[in-house]
Length: 71
Image (cartoon, rainbow, N blue to C red; front, side):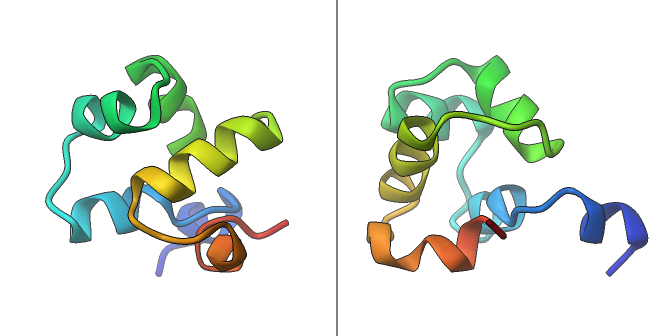
């Protein structure tokens, strides 16, 4: 893992790619914009509700948030 990946604070991109989802598809499933997915994958902060939507859109449970976000 590169230092850049370590610094971003989440695994959204890795999990999305493992599920063969495009940013657009994840955004549609989560009910957020593609720009939001792009920002989150780059490590920008987001609201708890957005995190919840992304976790559920990845097919995980809210209790699995530690696998996605390093809060």
